[in-house]
Amino acid sequence: MKREIILTKDGSPTIYLPDLNEHYHSTHGAIQEAKHVFILNGLNEFINQEKITIIEIGFGSGLNALLTAISCIESKKGTIHYTGIEAFPLTEHEQSKMNYAELLSFPPSIEIQKKIKQSPWNEDHEIHSRFELIKIKSKIEEIDLPSDHFDIVFYDAFGPSAQASMWTIELFAKLFNSLKENGLFVTYCAKGQVKRDLKAVGFSIESRPGPPGKREMTLAWKRF
Ligand SMILES: C[S@@+](CC[C@H](N)C(=O)[O-])C[C@H]1O[C@@H](n2cnc3c(N)ncnc32)[C@H](O)[C@@H]1O
Image 1 (tube, helix red, strand yellow):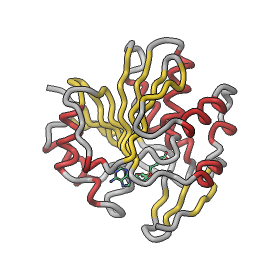
Image 2 (cartoon, rainbow, N blue to C red):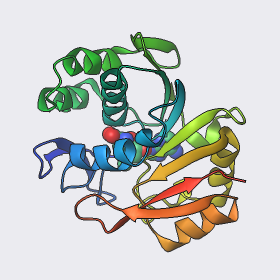
Image 3 (cartoon, rainbow, N blue to C red):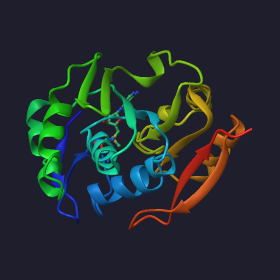
Image 4 (cartoon, rainbow, N blue to C red):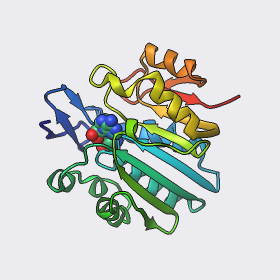
């Protein structure tokens, strides 16, 4: 599928898929959206926990992993194990254009982004003494996930109208099962049907204000 690199309104790049008319991030700002959805309303719910396990569906450019690693290092406590699932990895050329580290005012991010990029597929890799990453090259539908294992699911798939197969009850049930009790599934998506389907598999739904350009986003908690 054809992929084009474009600049979003906060000056950070993203990828556009003309065939689906879909972007990897909000055109209002890729970094701005990622920070709002996955860091402020995702990671920060767990930031005082000593060990956090995260799985991201749709690893793409690795922006969410980079921001997570930076937050972990800046917080000066705790460790994170991060699993990134990606079916169609970016090419070397595309990766080289995703200059997020240069746009972040945190000098170590250059080295961290480089290590994330170079980290081999399907192997655990230490990015920082407190941040470990495994990138798994696979479709999420095709892998088995451990039960009661993750604290957070970062759900960053293309939207339901572009890729309905990523927003099924079966997938949500698989991710619910992979979360620990009190675990969190967080996504930029606020579609009513998605929230109803998440609820149907057992999640407690919380809607919060979305990033600029989006009224709402969704947190789904595994609470009994
Ligand atoms: C919205 S983009 C993710 C953006 C990414 N998180 C980032 O910050 O660059 C959706 C991602 O899901 C990936 N994807 C599509 N189908 C998938 C599948 N079945 N399993 C896993 N990943 C998939 C795409 O290749 C793309 O990288």
